Amino acid sequence: MEYSFFYKTELPIIDSWDHHDRYDLFLSAFNSSERVNSVYLKANSIDKYWLIFPEYHYLENELPNENTFCCQGSSEGDQILSFFNHINLDLENTKICIDITGFMRPQLAFIIKFLYINKIKKLDLIYSEPEHYSSKEKTEFSDGNVLEIRQIIGFEGTHTQTTTDDLLIIGSGYDHNLIKSVCNDKEHAKIKQLIGFPSLRPDMYQENLLKTGLASDALGNDAVKNPIFAPANDPFITASVLRDTIIELNKKSSSAEGISNLYLCPLSTKPQTVGFVLYYLKELQGMPASIIYPFFTKYERETSKGINKIWLYTVEFS
Image (cartoon, rainbow, N blue to C red; front, top):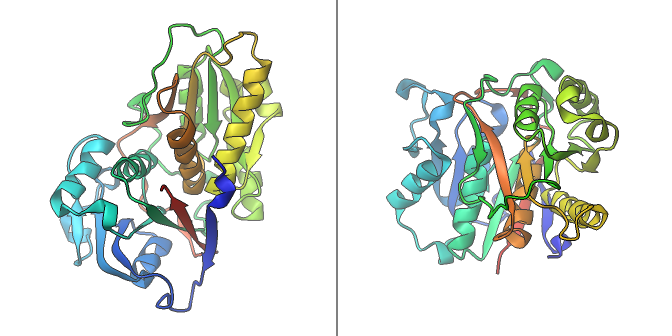
């Protein structure tokens, strides 16, 4: 797969988007951040929906008045399917745009896979970068209490019983407790750490290193000293870096068969999460590879201040 064929465009923060594409359906995960609410207002679409995910713990009187849908179910699959069963669209011929900024990563991964298998030809994704995180490197994105670590639905691999050359690639963000949990769960695997560089903002690279440093014991010496890098705002380069890294590590494997089981864990930015998903969908399905995630019950509603840039990513599946 040549990921460079996909492209990203910067959208204006202030000016109208009326001259950009008009969509049949625009979706956004509701939270309290300025960058999510601003994009919803600017999006040019016939229909718009706020998806309300239970992990944000909003009360009914805290929700917006227009076009909300409370996603039902305890899993990412049930929640996304509850919405699409409700609207009953001809997805193959629907022009869809999703603001990924407020999405939780498992729900984001599942909705892309769902649209992919339903033969959507093209999908536009929007991401708004923050000016800064509200508490710098001390910003909390989750309550940190991991309930379980499991495969994201739709990204379960056909894993082998051989584990001698297992590999975990973890996209490291600010949640060092989540990084520790995943690394400890796959403590038998070789670990590679993918870090967002260039970062969304210059100071965020240093903040990220400060937080991942708190998980250094779990990551191990090689993952800390020899990370791999991909731009924090580019899903397509992220997918390419993952592919190239795994090709190289397969060559270096002590086994003739290469990596025995591959585990990908996106804990970094949402654009990098999309990169993990695209790489998996295009190159890893049916293989001993899965995308795993540390699941927890509560996400913070607002973790950032301001808007730095707004990106439009266009993914063509056909």
